[in-house]
Length: 403
Image 1 (cartoon, rainbow, N blue to C red):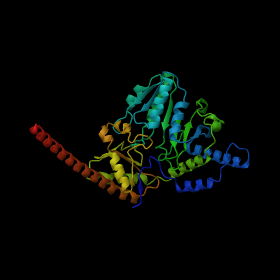
Image 2 (cartoon, rainbow, N blue to C red; image 1 turned 120 degrees about the vertical axis):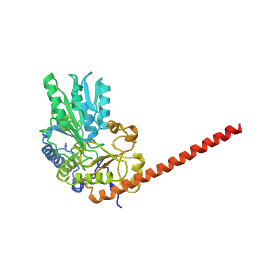
Image 3 (spheres, one colour; image 1 turned 45 degrees about the vertical axis):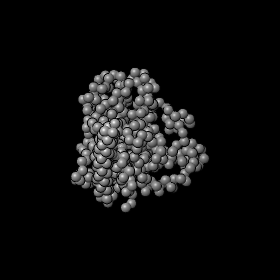
């Protein structure tokens, strides 16, 4: 059996078209800032690419910053926003670690207050509770548009509407940032109708490769420069432009939006096959508002052991976000109301643009089999521990009798 890769929410392979295009673009090595023909060619490709990306997203070219990935984009969103001491910023309890850590870092640096908006058992923010968190001191709100761990698509437009109404009523201004890293590959987004001020996204989730991402900035003139140098990208991110990355990103986004018809069917097929087993399995997230590619599965066995067991037989899944340095960060899954133990027994299965029906039909029984094998092993270990416990008790009695 060929290796079945089901961790696309961490990173998905390059599209074949992107791979071929990247190979051809390796010949375009010039610096877009150079005035000779090689540099001019690179600059032309860069400009045309950003125009195409802006057209896809429904925004202006000068509103886009090409970054090294979503983590940089998120940090740019926080540290590029104008915030002052005692301002308040709101994030949800289920944000990606990049958002969570960036919020804590800027709060410490600028003496801000971080407000955590809780979610319900399916990962949606309670709207009435959210409204109560807004105050005249609220200056930045950052929300994950779709969960990277359990796939729930946030009711973002409703929350934005409440924020804008609050702004008008209280004569204040609040910057809204959306982390669209997981949403963008599966939902067409028009920034003309999505009323956010900032939006970050990742090339690795689109099939564009690593070390490229983007940040939409609605009002570039109000955004603070973080990287100083030659003034590239409208003086918002200095450094030689990543022409290859930008082209890959734009092409991958176009392909992602054109080729996603079967993935939801494959996910439903896999869910049905897993839940039809006799195992105690739970699928997390909002069944009515869910990404087509992510399954968060709570099992009766330790997630790390299950991941290794599946990897050994040729199936790749994860325990959640792969972008955390810790082996298993359960903060997000616990925020849904699961216990620490349940969170440590939860795996993430995520499909991608090259996932096939055959792979799903092969993977499902293997996942069930490995869970059963681990349960059997745990039962045998429990018996051994019980025998050891009894032997210790008998030895203790003998020792006491000897005394």
